[in-house]
Structure formats: structure tokens, C-alpha cells
Image (cartoon, rainbow, N blue to C red; front, side, top):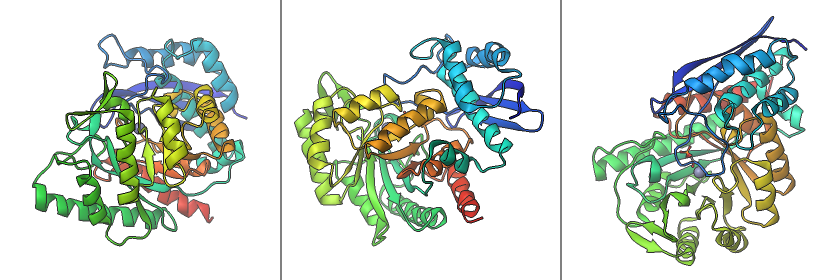
Amino acid sequence: MATITGVHADEIRDSRGNPTLEVTITTEEYSAHASVPSGKSSGTREACELRDADGVGVTRAIANVNTVIRDALLHVTIDSAQIDRQLIALDGTKDKHHLGANAMLGVSIAVMRLAAKEKAMPLWKYIAELGGYTPGFPRLYMNMLNGGAHSSFRLPFQEYIVAVGAAGPRESYAKANAIFETLGTLISERYGVVPMGDEGGYSPEMNGIETPFALLNEAMGAEAMAFLAIDAAASEFFHDGKYVIEGAPHSSDELFKIYEDLVKKFHLKSIEDPFDEVDFSTFHRITTELGTRALIVGDDLTVTNPEITKEMIAEHRANGMIIKPNQVGTLTEVFETVRLAKEAGWKLIASHRSGETEDTFIADLAVGIGAYGLKAGAPTQKERRVKYERLIEIEKEFTQ
Ligand code: PGA
Ligand code: ZN
């Protein structure tokens, strides 16, 4: 294997216009880039995204890549697992606040891209071989109505998603786009011009918990390959022990009943973070009582962290989870989490963040690990579209 001849990070802007980093790593023959997304409704146990004292800038994270990480990795052989271990040791903290999980992830992804290039393999295939996974195409979880923290709480839940699982990404994307277009027409007829949320979906103001679901159902029409999903991101509306929806406080049991009704009435099939990230007993209850009819998906609950995921599996607090590499900081840890979740029979949904870049890594990741779904947002933003476009490219590589 080749050795590293260059490590460099630059500042770029994410889809919200905030600074983030792009890392470039080179060998004698190749070079690879990776850029790092950023969440807004983050789980409290996520690895530390290193920002400057102003809470915005990433000059410290960039400096870490360009000095201490660069010095450690120059002339090192391209070996993802080994380099990730080196980064973890170099950081030396539990939450990665020394180097920054953002700095570490940029390096980790660029190294894996280089390793795939050195082997002349598409990235998804390299990932599949590395982990011994059966690759496959994910359902497209397209977030069409943005609420919660992604749109000043104009809608109570954070993401109202239509998931489409047709024969392959090209067909799924076409169907999802058609539904999104119909939705746009319905919204302009009924609500006029409405703002867009962080992930490129519509953000109308509506009354009634069921109204957004009824609207999406209408937009879906008779499309048999689509179903409804949500990311409630419930930690965001959990205040003083109550879930506050449309101004009214609800207990855990009352919120459970709301989900139960939505599953029955709208065939809601996938519910992410239905409760606050430490409301463990209600996570357990919903997994036990609704888990055969709906996928109960951990995100803030599990934060792509192997130790935390292990605990949630043992306590039966979900039966699916979000995989977001920047929640944990290195791909080696991501794959450890994937292994644990797969062994437990959990379904995986690879995911973007609300602040995205044009990096398409999660598309390769979703295919490589054979994820059940890919959350990549609405097609109004370039940063989201490129993920779907990469999937369609992979569909071509798949048959070659
Ligand atoms: P975030 O939201 O990227 O703002 O954390 C996405 C999610 O909660 O799934
Ligand atoms: Zn989430």
C-alpha cells in the first residue's frame, strides 16, 4: 500500500452558510477530498464538533489537521483502521474534544477514499468488502416537510418523510421527486408561498398534528412503493418533563398514544427519536408494543456510538438506528456500530446532517453496508441532490 504524502484542510461553507472543513489527503499517485457536515438538533452524547470560541469558526479544527494530524500521518501507510486508531490515540479524549470529531472524520473519510482508489474499487464496494456486508440499495427517506428545530418549530415534528423503495435508486428518486412536486403544488394552492426548512423541504404553518400526514398522503396518492416516516426529534420539544406540541404539554404516555394513532391511521412505518434521548422506558415500550408495525429508529438515542448502541440493543429500546459518521468521528467506530446493530437484526438508515456539504460519502456508505434507508433531504438543495445522484451512479457501477 502507498504512503501519505500530503494532509491539508481548508475552510468551506455548508448548506446553512456556516464554516466547515474540507480535507485533502494525497499519496504519490492519488488524492482524495472529504468534507464534514454539521447537525443542529444534535444528541448530547455525540462526539465533540470542535468550533472556535465564537461557536462558529472552525479554524482550530483546521489547524489541528494541518499541524498535529499532518505531522503524525505523513509517510504512514494507507490503512483505514490503523489510521483511525492513530487518530483516536492522538486525540486521547472520550468525546474527541482535543482534535475535534469534525477534524478526525474529514481525515478518516479521505483516507478511506484513498484506500479504495489504491485498490481501484468503487468506494461502496470497498466498504462492503471491508465489513463483509452484502451491498444493496437503500429506500430513499426524503424529508419533504421540515419542522422542529429545522424551521423555527412551524411544525411540531422535525421531519415528515416519504420513503420510497422501488427497484433501484433511479426509479426511487423519480418517484420521490414526483411526490415532492405534487406536494409543492398542493402547498402553493392551500398555503401560498411558504418558507423552506434547513433540509430543503417545505415548511408551512399548519394546525393539527394529523394535518401534515394527511397532506403527504394526498401527495403520495396511490404510489404503492412509498410509505410515511418521521423524525420526531423529540428531545427538541421536551421541556420540564413534558412533550410540548402546538403549545400543549403531553406526558410520555400521551405522546405514545399519538404515535399509535398515526401508525394506525396513516400507516406511519418508521419513527425516529419518538421520545427524549433519556426517556428510556418509553423507548422500550414503543419498541415492544409498536415495533412490529413500525421501525423505531434511534438517532439522538444511539449517536452512532458502539458502546451506547450496545446498551440500547440490550435494553430493547429501538429496532433500527441512524448512522451519521460525524456523531462518532471515525469510520472504524461507525463500522463497529454497524456490526453490532446488524448482529441484533436492527435496520440501518444512513443519514446526512441538516448542515450539509457536497460530499457524497453517505451514499456509498448506505450501499456498502446494505442500509435499509438513506436520509438525504429534499432535492431543492444541491448538497442533498448530489447524494441521490451518486446513488444513481452507483446503480450503474453495480452492474459493471
Ligand atoms: P441534525 O438533524 O442534523 O440537525 O442533527 C438531523 C436529524 O435529527 O436526524
Ligand atoms: Zn434525527
